[in-house]
Image (cartoon, rainbow over all chains, first blue to last red; front, side, top):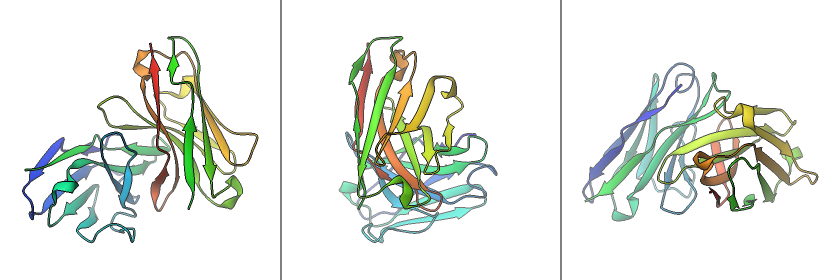
Length: 109
Length: 118
């Protein structure tokens, strides 16, 4: 099983960008998706869990959704500090463990 | 708030066995239905789940690494370990330990420890 993310996405400050994560019926289809961002030299940080739930410390600019076997992370009001790598992750029945997407590098122009 | 910290050798030679330990604070294996994981990240690459051990002691491994890895609960109730046998330069990576569950995913991470095989 593979989770497919667009390798890169870019936007200007204030814009809204969407990052997608495509899977199948052994992972995204039945299970909740988690989203992280990661800055160089640091561990991933949780942005979204259960596909669309946001921890209290995460700004409301970040939102998640899921449709069928795809998940989406939207970032509105883009800020320069949002420039990072973004990963999706989900449980997979075949692996019987977690799958990570390949990551999307967000550049704020 | 649980915190996790990895410890390990840093540098190994090819064919050696990598042994890593994760020590966590503010939780214990008996506290709930958590999966205790190892995840790695090759230089400049994405994240790769390696294995988890459940609080009951059940363990699952990434099929691509299964033949070389063992995950175990430590002697104390706040440690778990990873052994990766017959390392090669392809095992050079940052190794993270992390806690997860099926709702939140892998949501609490250690800072990571860099392992170089050379």
